[in-house]
Image 1 (cartoon, rainbow, N blue to C red):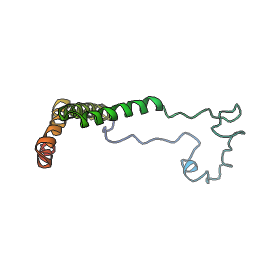
Image 2: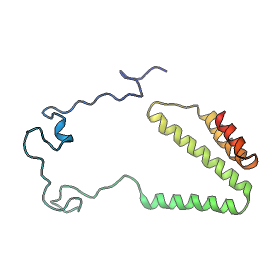
Image 3: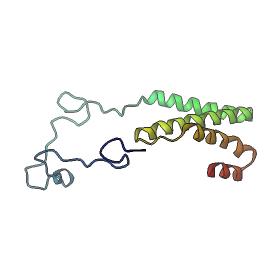
Image 4: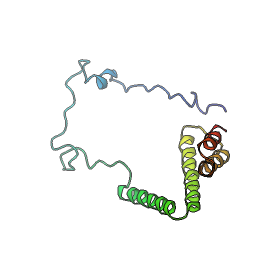
Length: 144
């Protein structure tokens, strides 16, 4: 597979500091003699007040929705575990497939494209192998 740009996909291009900034000022607290360190604007930082300079900081995720999804998936896993074991195996196989699909999407951002079908088949097969045959079969499945 040939690299897409001028550099290999596993190496990031070197960032050039903006003009007038030696690069040391940011790392060592502006000790390069270019003047005093920048002062924070008046007001409490992060308070959302008009003079604070910053608004409310958000991480980009919806915490109540993430909690609801986590509790629902965990509750479904526990429900299937304590009722019918075969449904637990189906549920865990489906969750392994979804997790491997998400892993493939995350790796694709960096330009790494694993073959989805063999990886998903191996991940889904690992669940019943571990249940019926034990840890030796699971290790063999992961080795293959």
